Length: 61
Image 1 (cartoon, rainbow, N blue to C red):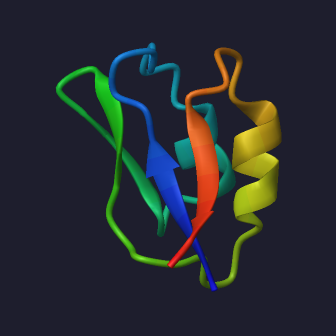
Image 2: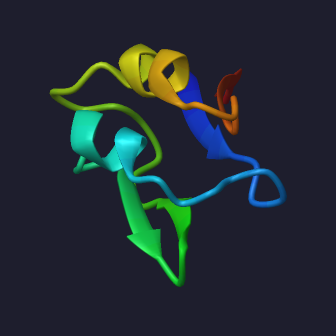
């Protein structure tokens, strides 16, 4: 199972990940955060691929 992770140091808070996977990512305090441990009905890989600064990764749980 893959777990989404956001690198807070390079995240620019653009919201792309939240637009792809709103049940997994949420923008708070200008940065993206993970609000679910795994992808549900969305495609987290789209969020990874769509991040303009490559701040999102999928890691093995």
